[in-house]
Length: 429
Image (cartoon, rainbow, N blue to C red; front, side, top):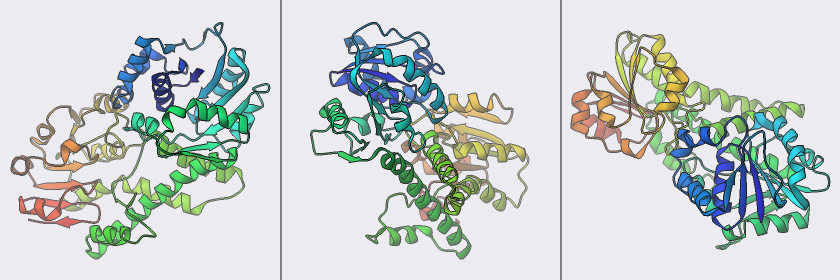
């Protein structure tokens, strides 16, 4: 098939790489906000496993070609599929772009809306297509595992009201649907709402567990026992029950806000969703509050090492990441920060600039701890899981480790001579 992909999101880049890899002839038109030279230098794309290599491979083999935003050449053979993967705030641009790109579509072409838009938007896009059909394909990519989740999907959530359009989408993705049936078809509006509802449920589980962790702190209970007890209940399970210092990310956070917008536009108000968002924002400050309590509010002039800035391991993005809230709180108290992250330092510097109270590190995590009073673990990169404990204990002046992801054993940290403060967990030497 001839496929035209529009957008500069991770979903667009992954679709371009994967569909060209399985033999489709793909033309990729990035959004005007981020052309290919910009994308090729972006940390979030270059740090995504496999993706850049696959994109370059597709371009080298000729199965993937790049188009220039603002002046796409549609004079060649018409396209069978228009794949739309733009951010929610580019919705109006996308609608206008579709009207222009229609000239390059063949009769009977299908629009695959892989963007997270308001419920009902796919139907509105179809009304601009002059007879072509539109389907909603939920973006279920996991950042840091985008290539794997696209090429070995656990499922495709397809919103489709037309059997012919379903057949075209199945043919488009046939090479990625061989192990077992992964398509789950439902009406378009149902698929659009399901995508938002999934992230709403996951966020609710995280925020509920964080709320329980706060209670465990007050009661002197190790929340790990509670987590394991809850997870062992087959009605609950273990997924997304890990307490932490808050979630972030461009898609997760944006989808929650989109769900809130959908609720509001329908005349409903979700007190539950408001609480989920409030708990998460409050949790982003939890490591700062633990630091404040340990030093009885006397923080000015102290130095803190932070391990991890990305909103999750495997990515260079810091969109709505807890580290941003943490940095602002620390600097407001005159605390110097020595920050290490293997991928996200450029994104941090782009966001906060060369701050006088910030020093950054990209190589040895322990180097960031030299001269620090305490260490805060914010992102659970694998490189942080097993540090040189004796050296770490020597480096931290006040022997304080604040674990925002509960990846360490409190008893082990305490046995190394350090004070441990996790999320609903604690231990002292």
